[in-house]
Length: 481
Image (tube, rainbow, N blue to C red; front, side, top):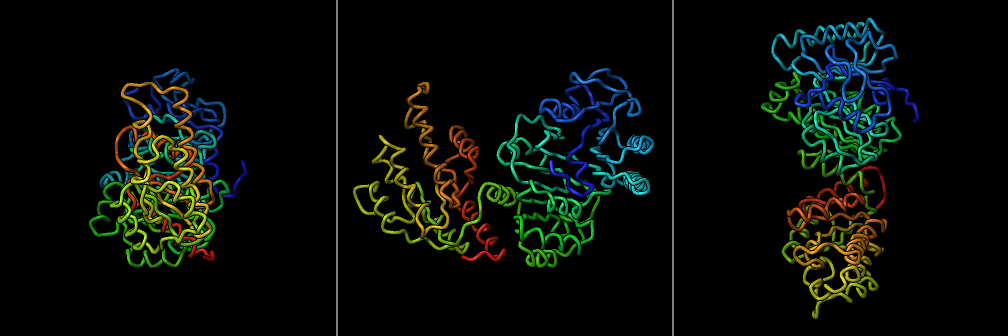
C-alpha cells in the first residue's frame, strides 16, 4: 500500500470498521453490510454494533461503540435517521474522525429530514469528523475486500477502474459491475453532507492504482472551478468518464427528490467546460458503463483505421455505417493479410473489410480454431489500428449433440477457440466483440471472453461508438495518429 496524502485515504484503507445497526436478521437490508465484509474476507477488524446481539455472523457484537476496546478507524451507520445524530455525537466523544452514513431520510425527505441533515452537517464540520453520505453504500476498496452493499456479492474482478457516484443507481447492478469490470475503488457521495465530487476526483487523480476514472454527478456541490481544474489535469493522464444527469429542469427536480440537491448548473455551460478537458462525457447509463469497460480493458488505438469482422452482410453494413458515423475509416489490409484471409474464403470472392465470417465459416466447421487463426492476421496488420467483430454463434451448438456431456477433447477444442480471440486481443491492437444473440449459452461465452478482458457489447454500434471514444481520447491527449 502506497499512502496518499489525502483525507479520503483513511476511508479506503481502514484497519477496522464498526457497523452500527448490524443484524443477524437476513430479511433486513443491513444484514448485507456485515455479510459482505465477512464473506469477502475484509482485511481488517469488524465490530458489529447491536444492543440485542452477542454475535453476528460469527463475529463478536457490541452493545455500543464505547464498548469496543480496540481502535475504530471508521464507523458505518445504518440505523433510523432520527437516531443517527446520537451516534455522530458518540463518535465525537470517542475521537472517531471517519463516519459513513448509509441511512437515507435526510435532505431528500422533507422539512424534518432537511433540518436533521443540517444539524449533522454543522456538527461534523465543527468537530472535524469527515463524513461520507448520508444515503451512501461505499467506500469500496477491492485491495482489502472492503465492500459495503445491500446485495450479497459473490466475487469480483480487481482492476484499475475507480467509480465515483452521487446516487445509488449503481447498487442493483453491483453483482454485474463487480463480475464484468475490473474494479479498484468506489465512492458514493450520497447527499454530500461533507465529502463531495471534488474530493473524490482529487483522490482518484492521486491514487496510483486508479488507471481509469468514471464519475456520475447530479449536481456540483464542491468548488466548480476547482473541479474543472482537477478534471483538466487528471484527464490528460487517466481516461476520465463523466455522466452528468439532472440535465433538464424535470431531471434536476427528480435529483432533488432523492439526494436533496437541486442540479442548478446550466447543462450547456457544463458541457462546454467538459470539452475544454480530455474527459469523455457519457450521454446515458449504457454509454457510461460501455466506456468504463472499454477503457478498463483496452488501450486507445494508434489511429482511426478500423477492421470489421461480421457474421452476416446486414450486420456488416450496420457496422460500416457506425464506423463512418464515428469518424473511423475502413482499413486497407496489406497483401500478406489478404493472402491469409483468402485461405478461408468461400468458393467465391468476397470483400476483406468488412469480412463476412458467417458465409466463410460454414465451409470450415471441421476446423474452427484453424479458421479463426487465419483471421488473426488482421489485427497484426500494420494498416489496422483497431478491430471489432461479431461474436460467432455458440460454439457448443457445433461441437456437442443435444444432451451430450463435454469430453476432454471437446473442452480442449473450446479452449483453443477462446484462445484465438484472446490472442487477437493481445495482438497490441484494441479488439472488441459484439453479440450475435441473447441466449443463455452465449452469455456463458460472453463471461469467458470478458474474464480475459475482451470487451463484449450488445451491438455493433455500441462497440464502434465505445472504440471511437478511445480514438478521440488519444487525439485529445496529443497522441499522434
